[in-house]
Length: 194
Image (cartoon, rainbow, N blue to C red; front, top):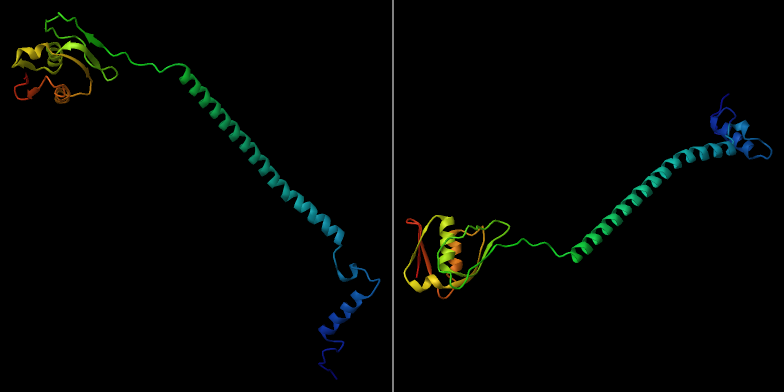
């Protein structure tokens, strides 16, 4: 006669309870129940962890080397910039020499000058008659000059003529002076001085 009672000797639950009771009894070894040795498992875990922790140490070392290289580069750049500033403070910047046109007071000939402005060096007229200035400009821009009043020829000016000045902007610059007024007729290429 079979009984299905939970604590009958044929039941699986009963077998587990018996094994549990025996495990708790004093003097039984772990090998009887298939329990692993704790010391062996600890050694295996320590070895596995040591191999995995070796890789982050390499990454930390590489990051330290990269950091040192960056710091050296920043220090080099800072030193280089400071030296460049000191050099520029010691030696004044080189300036481009501007061609300066001067005439004598009694020079009344209207010969055009051979100088022309360049992008780096504009022409500076210092105490030059309007007649000589306009003769030089007219030769460069291929136009004629006509004077309505004779005294306008003898007006002396201090003027800078830049290479990027068009003829119209040059005339506008000269018209800022009180004693002189220029007009330009583009169809006849004529500058009239009033």
